[in-house]
Image 1 (cartoon, helix red, strand yellow):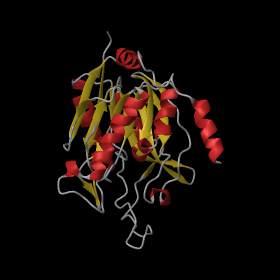
Image 2 (cartoon, one colour; image 1 turned 90 degrees about the vertical axis):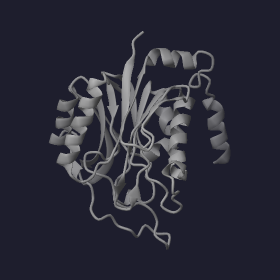
Image 3 (cartoon, rainbow, N blue to C red; image 1 turned 90 degrees about the horizontal axis):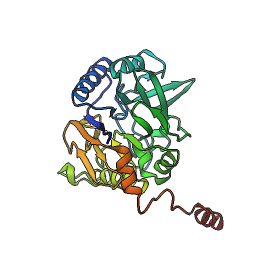
Length: 288
């Protein structure tokens, strides 16, 4: 039996890069003391997210952020500092990636060995495309913590994204988020907010349908007009929530034998094996 301790962070990160790195260092040390091998931070944890997101009353995206996240290079000093802090741990952080003239909302997977992979957010909600280019690649990465896939926030609303990573051999999928409460019908109790419920539902559904370990981080508190729903969690391959922060800041930590958990979940009904892509494609072609 070989167990792995995995964790997701629920915390608030703004524009102050030095403060963000200090907070990341604190969470890494806290996680290290608990034997964590894989730690996922929220979306945009190195430079903050967008301060507004959504349509104005006239239906257009006419609200503009007060400022934009600072751009960073994947091989730049900020990511190198995270790799130095990570050492033996595999860490996933979010940043605004510079690539030529384009900006990408990116997740970077690092350890003390360097960068293992980069995922650029593909699915862009509520006007995010006004500020970021979209990624176009889904693939898993080999890391000291195993073969993992990375998604960002709204990506998890699309079953094809997580399924692509599972088919590429990801046994653990990290999903880093800056997922807010509803701005049009916010519940007084954040736990009852409809977007909180969707956030949690997607996590359990994606883990279960792909029979993978799911590690979901999220921002907390507020940023501009956004109020984040927290609920960082680890979900097992049977869709069961193994650890969660609920509405609080902190770490959701779970110890799991990944190979055994996947083998148990997939023993009778193995969803990846039992797919019928020939039937799915035929349906798509018939509607074209």
